[in-house]
Length: 438
Image 1 (tube, rainbow, N blue to C red):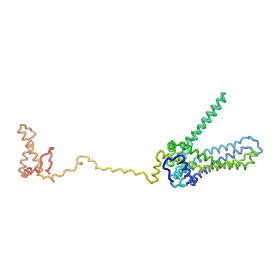
Image 2 (tube, rainbow, N blue to C red):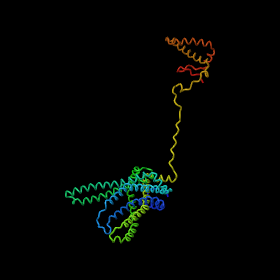
Image 3 (tube, one colour):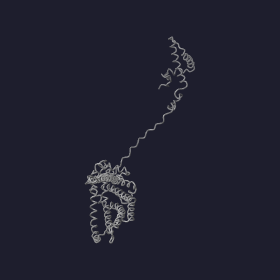
Image 4 (cartoon, helix red, strand yellow):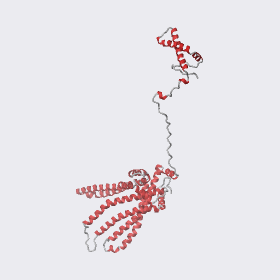
């Protein structure tokens, strides 16, 4: 079934969550089961160990009550606790990160109407394993660890102040105020932690859908959750209530049965180790079942909130419609080819083609005629200057050239005929022969 193409209300998101969960029940439960089993085994081993140690501290028949545990037992308990913090918590962090990323990938695919398998979901999760571990670590650090550290620091400071006031004799008067302040502080830190968790709740869907790294996904989640954090809180509250109800329904009948079977041990005043171990095993089994069946609902709802927020803010529905229709973004227009011109010449001689040969237009006789015409015009101009009484020595060359003209005309009788037929133009304004008249 394809993703919705319009903004959804909270009721519609929850309804679609149930629909996707029912239609893909085997897929989602199959993804959630292996990590839930690993978490149950790790936590179960630690809880069963501590239950057995606590039971060993209780006095048995014939032993006096009130004896403290041995130093060896306390040392073993301390080593196990340190090992759990150093080894167990990182394992749980990695397993839970893989489960969330695989479920987010599967939910995103089925929400778009695409096929997906359990193997493909885990392949996607392990492809960017450290990225998802980083997201879960940042979520836990900012939402729960940091407020808890603040609480511890304020509690230590408050304890020191209370001790100082007790020495001064005013401790009893301020004792109720310290109690009230501690309760208010705890509630305030819980509210802050929940608000921060909601703010960063879409980091996994963002990282899976947009392939962002850990911190950019956290920032992007803060942007997308604006305006809908109240709706996300209601969804969290409903999922939490569902988990509590499922746990109570499954745990209470089994615990009652165990209590009835161990009635004789209770009446004898003993706390048998077997009873505590059975209680822990039952609780772990119930926690495993709740985690397997409820965690997919939580993840699918967050994926739908992510898609809905993108639709409201960024028009994600249009992108989905284009993807469903098989449309893609048009290719960029081709850049028009720039017409390549030949390089500019480096000198005027190469810039202009050579002038045609004068032999193709004029004969040697015509070029001589043109030169004679120049001389004739110069001679006439010189004669005009002499007649007007203005004689200049600079015109002597023109007079000498006219004598050459007379000799040439005598040797070439065709010159006069060519000039009279206007086959040759006179001198241009620039002083260059322009060739024959067309």
